[in-house]
Length: 199
Image (cartoon, rainbow, N blue to C red; front, side, top):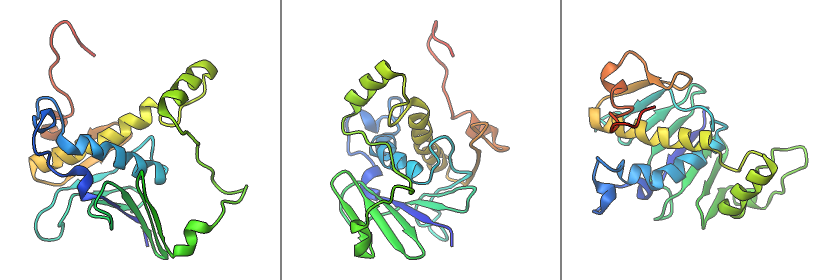
């Protein structure tokens, strides 16, 4: 069975006000807390340099929440977790791991006490983003979360917003970073820049 992920709905609810509520300046809570949570999900799936292949907005029938499908078959949803704050739940056939900044829960409960063996995957340890960045400037090492991984994480947020705004499923090519056969959605990837700025 492919893995499933749930991103806390608390993380990406509609902002009640402030600058994030204005589409000219922001992607709402989707690009605020959502970016942090999708970053954890992408990292956990080993997709830091890729992304989903399909984005499906809620339709009130088969899809109750925003749903992303990855080429591996993994499904990621904007759904609730057990705690009332932003987080990510990784669900597999034998249980789950739920994580946020202040919280770690596993099922089975014994999983949280297992030590990672030397031959298993060990993640980059970074206690402080600013120190990690300055250290990497000095050493030329890749930081814990580099620009490409950050770009891919916020892209997941933007894809979700575009699916919400167009109110229909979208196909995405994560290599070309373009929608498949959808010129209307492609036009929403960027916006005209003020002279003399250009990319």
